[in-house]
Image 1: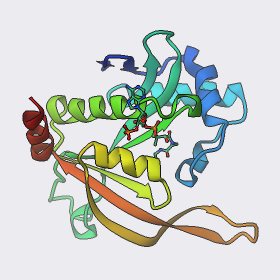
Image 2: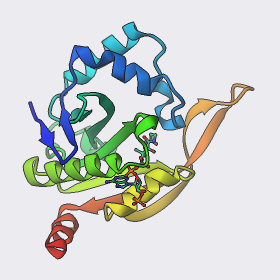
Image 3: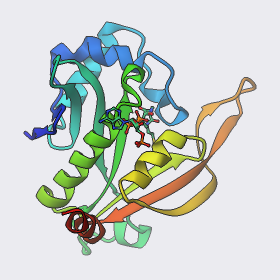
Image 4: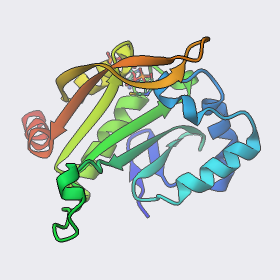
Length: 199
Ligand SMILES: CC(C)(COP(=O)(O)OP(=O)(O)OC[C@H]1O[C@@H](n2cnc3c(N)ncnc32)[C@H](O)[C@@H]1OP(=O)(O)O)[C@@H](O)C(=O)NCCC(=O)NCCS
């Protein structure tokens, strides 16, 4: 079980008592990429915190130190992509994942206060220095300016734009709405060099 402390935040595994705070930020408007996370009831939120609590190494509640309130969540997911020719050969074991992708949601009441940067910076440090991660990448919708700004502030490189890459929601006629997706990434070496240049 891991806990990461920053100046104003504690990133820690979810507890059942977090359900009301989670409902608060997952019942409001969410970007399309998180549409499937939308919650309507406290019972749904209780079930979700149990699921999140089962992944204490990579899924964190973002707790505000001064009040103990959970103001969001941040998770790092291993990239499971492997070319089909590797996936199908039992004799070729896949290396353990060293590439992770973060996802982050903050309660809208706490946007614009630097908490997203503080939490993500701490998670990247944790992944690169304590979990042996080599590469972190993020997919960001092309209209999500706040998230793009965050990636750039963290020193991630913009690697590409995938046009009509994925669909998370349907329009009124039931047709998939396709998103243009930006990919950002940073390597451990790049992260460590940034840290060195700041000291
Ligand atoms: C993406 C998201 C997490 C970004 O949150 P955010 O509040 O914009 O980001 P930050 O917390 O880093 O705040 C940014 C601004 O807060 C202010 N700020 C920074 N540090 C601060 C501090 N210590 N005290 C007060 N204000 C501060 C600054 O104006 C900063 O802008 P800057 O980076 O240009 O200096 C948020 O918009 C969100 O949850 N969106 C919905 C979910 C989502 O889109 N997730 C990403 C999917 S790819």
